[in-house]
Image (tube, rainbow, N blue to C red):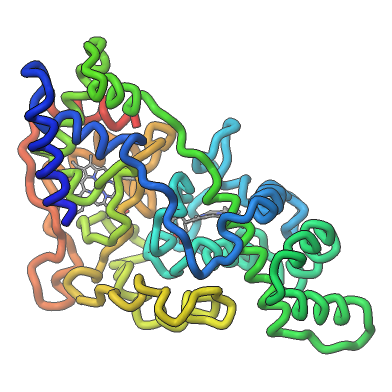
Amino acid sequence: MKKIARFLSVLFISVLSSISIKAGDIEDAIYFSLRGLPPFPVDKSNYFQQNPDAIRFGGKLFFDTDFSFSGDVSCASCHFTNSRFIANESIPAGQSRNFRMVMQITGAAYNRFYFWDGRIDSLWAQALEPIEHPDEHNLQRHEAVKYVVNKYAKDLDTLMAQSDGYQKHLMLVHHWLTSQNQSLPIESINHVFALIGKCLAAYQASLPIDRTMWDEVAIAKINNQPLTLIQEKIWQGFNIFKGKGRCSACHDGPLFTDFSFHNTAMPTVSVLGIEVGRYRVLPEIQDLEFGCHSIYSDAGKDDCLHLKYLNKRIEENFGAFKTPTLRGINNKTRFGHAGQFSSLKAMIEHYNAPPIGTHGKLINQQSLSELQPLSLTEQEKGHLITFLEAL
Ligand code: HEC
Ligand code: HEC
């Protein structure tokens, strides 16, 4: 369907445009830039996703360092640096977190699955993991709920006035907090905990996506304006990205990701050995404690289509990791889910002459890697890097 739409628009644009622009240039410039960004998809599992009060409250929580055991960790500690929403690489990707690098939250609301292996199926449920993780906020669930109910009583009241569903649970939590020796109302605690995640998700989904140098180039192309010298190089890099380099096969669209999972023969980290990635998390994903199908989700019976049409084929999931967005990649110094490469140049060499990939041998195949050798010239690699740096 997408292909047909693109073909028709190429046809349309090529009839209209002047001879100086190649057919398809304008449409590609739109397709891969902020101009082509669709509105955020509605997450039916989160009733509060677009609620302005939830967005405001989620924003306060995102930056609140008191919302942690040590009193100095917030979501922003790892996801907001130099006054921008970029990953803080000074936070080590240690053994306890499986050496996983901090991810970008740019455009996070467009994803269907979260984390490098996609083990969580919504943005609100994702936010709950770091709160309890011993190397992150390190809070016990009831402590997290207690803190929020006490400190953000007003914000919660405002939200409660807009939804009947949570009032009962908040009341039970209040009752537990005020009476002595009362056992934990576990289900109500979970509901309020889920609400915290939903507000954090609402906030993240409200964040605008930075307009970058690449978007300027795309706009100049769309408006048929002449490019500066550096813009011309960026454009040439883009042509390699979507052409000979085959990068757009996975890094697709304005966020440069297909939101899917691929085996790209990434080098193993010695202490971790061979990682099965996406494949390991698939058996549990239909029944996550805070998943789309759970009682804490606001989705209707037929709203969890990303779970219904899940790709479980071993060949496509074994050793596969999520295609990350490439927006803001210039702010990173380490690349890959475990920071396997320390420069864009090294990353491109990996794609240019990819290794066979160890995972296939575990299921009696030569390789499961989807990569093919590219034979890029030094100049083409240079243009590609210039393009990536403009994202
Ligand atoms: C100590 C650092 C740290 C803190 C604190 C932290 N994160 Fe993260 N975040 C990470 C790491 C590391 C990953 C990737 C982990 C993985 O894949 O196993 C990640 C992944 C994510 C993702 C997934 C993005 C994607 O595309 O899949 C989102 C969204 C996110 N974090 C939001 C949050 C929110 C919201 C909070 C606060 C509740 C938070 N993070 C707290 C380090 C942190
Ligand atoms: C078959 C799908 C696929 C193709 C083709 C592909 N990528 Fe990737 N890319 C991925 C996946 C998946 C990852 C994450 C791999 C991991 O860490 O395990 C990734 C990671 C990256 C990263 C690191 C991002 C980060 O945040 O750490 C960069 C940079 C990158 N790719 C650039 C490119 C370029 C440039 C090309 C073309 C030469 C390309 N990719 C082709 C799927 C692909």
